[in-house]
Length: 144
Image (cartoon, rainbow, N blue to C red; front, top):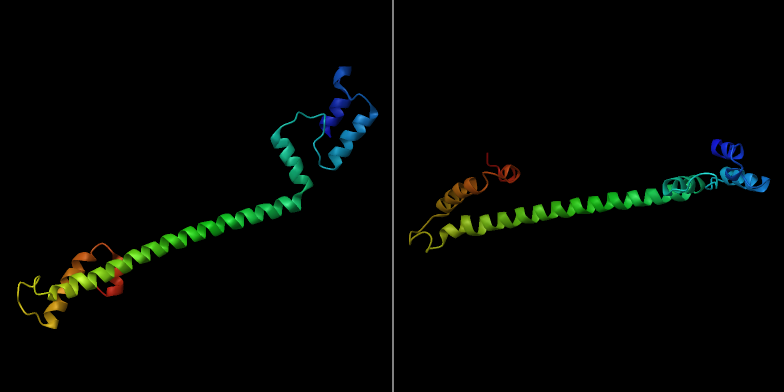
């Protein structure tokens, strides 16, 4: 309203409203939250006026956009978590298959016959070495 009043009262006739209809049109546009002609045009001003005219639609679009962004973030986080669990599962399979039971293979035991207890003891030592950095996995295996 200040801009409309200042334009109507401007000292230079060329910068005033050309007619009462032009003044009335700007007042109507102001009341309808549309951009007024007396103000300099900028995308920020037009966006603000648009937002005021379409509050519900802009709010709904913003809510949907925010929901999509949050959902995408959650999906990304879940995928990272799944990859981490997959890598851990593969590590455990490798640990059990190669390090623990692989010790019983004659080529690795240098021809010695190992009892089940000896295989498990060797496996426990290897578990300690392999899991030194993975505290969560060590907790699951019960090692400290």
